Length: 120
Image: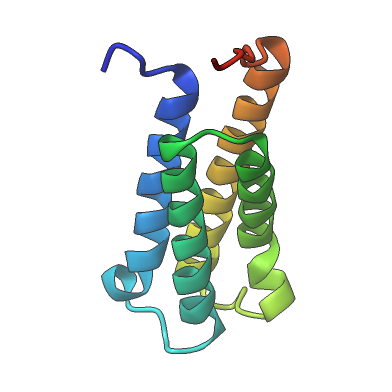
């Protein structure tokens, strides 16, 4: 664990948030509509991006996580499930957290870009 940077901790947090979002329809009893479908799809996307970033960091993964986080944040209004207060709250909170973590990682990378090494 000596090579664990703050960026990797952000990716672990995103992995947990993605798993939580994916499991939330079962944990909180969402109906089988748009809220559940979006939780499954966005949760899987967030988790896969987090795993990819943990395996081999690339800036594009953080940009995609930012986009998925923002989508998760606005999904209750776009998909029309803002009447389901529990699903809406979970989507908004997870969306804000994922987008914020992605923005923090992007900011950290702009402050301290990874060093390129010559192989050979």
